[in-house]
Structures are given as structure tokens and as C-alpha cells.
Image 1: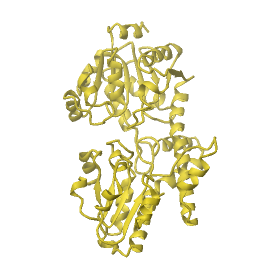
Image 2 (image 1 turned 90 degrees about the vertical axis):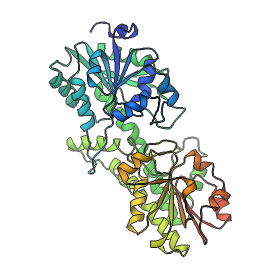
Image 3 (image 1 turned 135 degrees about the horizontal axis):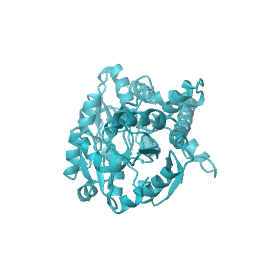
Image 4 (image 1 turned 45 degrees about the vertical axis):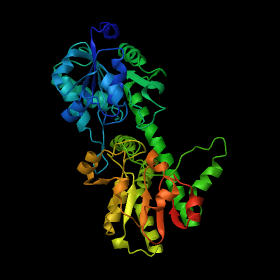
Length: 437
């Protein structure tokens, strides 16, 4: 491998990022501060937005997109100009919870058709151990006619982007890197070292790096599942879960997890990649899948409690007016893909309730396309019988109780504060039927 790192620094070679979502876009912009960067995405609409200085992901911001030197394109032939490639496309699961590798396979085909000798390809997409070498590399070879390990090299560096988080950013989170051999590992480490100020961690193999990624989110999933199960138990005991967690949290080594809906592209997805691989090797997961079952059922649990409170408030369930505040999978993030708030919506619909959904942060077009949901503005919301506060957006956390009062119709006010965002004592003192996980 000729001095690829030196060629990148001297701008005799270019770097490409394939897939410009909330992971790929900040990565491309960060590298473009020092290197010549090509940003490729299949979505022509998205590319046009970027060219016009608009960031629909909200991760980098419009100013950063407008000022960057990234060459945005949906023309795959541009990839032939680059020799260091980073693939950052989503890896979701299917309805049956099996891994859907179609996007990373498709990206590998496109890249393979435009791969030149001497290139390095690094995958950031979350996968189970073995995918980079056993699935992606053969596709690159087939499409390019080149030989992996001879004509091009591969590596893996799991993404650690936390959507909506303005503190833990690409630059401030240590990056795990790996390569198919020591030479590739050093190149990958040096290239990422240009943008990751927190430093890089050299994993001993690609499979180790792939496994590290899936267990990071599996660990969080299991911990949140434990909190959700505690919430189920404590509600039966008539104890407030947050009060218990606040008391337990005074111990120095108590982990500060909280119950909630677990959606998004990582925590609610990655565990299935690990359990799928385990099952292919003859091992059926017990702890991981048990946690997944608990977390996947929490939307139904919230909706059922909304129905119980409506009955307690002497509201007619089928004609009840219910508003859901927040539909994205996490706070202050526009992404609605794989949101578990939709489970609340579907369950309420089964009871004959068509909830109104308000979300000033969410991508309205995506909500309509994926779920058939029409989002409302708070100003257009008619008085309701119940409110389910499902996402802790800043716009909602700033709501005062008198503003909340105006959203309700006559009679008892039913409020389900899924994230525990509000002051329980204040709302109960105001005669609300208040509930939280």
C-alpha cells in the first residue's frame, strides 16, 4: 500500500463517505476540514438539500453544511476519484427481527463498481461479527474484479454518534478502529485520528470491533429493560418508580438508567444482530431477548394505562380526544424511523381512538410516509381529554402548567408523562390524573 495517508494529507487522494445520514454527514464535514472529501448518497433529494445548505438530520447544522467543502453527489462514478472510503449506511431489522443487510450490501455493490486499486474501505454500519469480511468484502471483489488483501484492503470502525447530543460528538468520543492487517490498521487509525480528538482504540481484529459495537447497545438495552420491569412491578405495588430510583441513586455505584420507550437505530436494533449470529452458531440468547421483549412491549403498556386513566376520569373511551406530544425516537432529534411511540398510536387506534400528534422537531414528511401520520402544531391542537408526553423535546420541557391547562377540555385532566419530565407533585396538587413510568 503506497503512502495513502500521506496522499490524503497532500490531497493527492480523496476520501469518500457513502451514506449521508446522521452518521455520515458529520463525518464527511469533519474530514473535509483537512482532506478532499466526496459525500455520496443515493437520495437525490437529500443531496440537493445539502447543496443548498440545509441539514435535515440536524446533526451538523445548516451553517456547517453551507460552509463545508464536501463535494455532495448522487452520481456513484464520483467514487472512482477516492481511495479511502467510509460506508455509513443504516442496518435495520426486518419485521421478524432478523438483520436486514440490504442497504450495506447495496452500498458495497455500488462502491465495488467504482473501486480502484490501492483503496481502503472502512465500514461503520452496525453489523454482527463477520459481516465485513464474509459479506461485504466478497461483494466488493465480485463487483470490482479486484482481490481483497491484494488490490484493496478493508477495515471496520463502529459509529458512535448519539443523535441530538451536543456534548458527546464525533470529535469527543474515542473511536474504535480495526483493519484486516497491521498495515491497514495503522492507516485507518491515522486517518480517523485527524478528526477524533479523543483518540482511537486499535481493536485486535475486525470481528472484535464489530462485536464491541453490538454489545455497547445491547448492554444499554438490557439495563433499560431492567428499569422498565421495575416500573411494571412498582406500579403494581403503588410505588413511584422515579422516587425509588432517586433514592437508590444516592449509592455511588448505582447505574443511572431510567425506564422508557426504546426505539431508534441502535439500542432497539443492535441486540437482534448479536442474537441472530448467536442462533446461527447454535446458541439461543436468554438475557438479551428477554430484555428485548420487555422493551418492545412498553408502548402497549403506556397506551393501556392511558385507557385506564380515561375510564377513571369518566371519559367515553371511543370518543376520547387524546394528544401525543412527541413522536421521534428520542428528544431533540427529527428522526422518526423505528420510533416506539408508534406502538402507543396503534394501540390507541385499536381502542377506537385517533390520537392527535404534535411534534415541532420531527420530520413531518417522514412521519407521513412511514406511518401515515399528519403532525399538528401546538397552536392547532383542540382541547383534549388526555395528553401523552412521549418525547422530552426542549419545547415540551419548557411548558408551564398553566400552558398545559389550556390544552385540556372540561372535566378531569389525564396526563401520562412517559419520560418523567414534569413535576409530579405540582400536577397532582392541581387535580391532574398524573402517571409516569
